[in-house]
Image (spheres, rainbow, N blue to C red):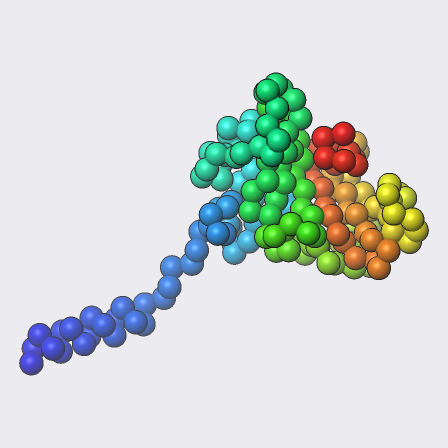
Length: 182
């Protein structure tokens, strides 16, 4: 009877114990406060300026380039858990999220802007954002660029003709590249 009572109490304690919150988002960046944030300095634990190796260590796994170049100093794109990390000369220069990439829908800025946010939400969160014409889509599509340090650190939001964010790019001057590494 005593063993049964002890086993019952142990089972009750285990069932009532709070679950340990996850520290990773499906094997990607360690999450602080429940979600990683995209910003001019990087995404989650990956900071602009890190080497690709440092970024991989911060994520807990090596990054694998898409279309690997033989030149380690060439511009490379490293897709990982919905984010696209751009490296130039072996260092992370930009982090992007695209509407059509699985896992990217949860990526948000500290101001709460993410894929699918409206033009008005971006303008409210970033009142100083500059508007520029979209490169490949006619008006009303456009880009909103919010520099924290002019031409050095910022975020570019690509807004489609329906007025929604379809791509976000954060980091250094490479946020202005229109086609990946160019």
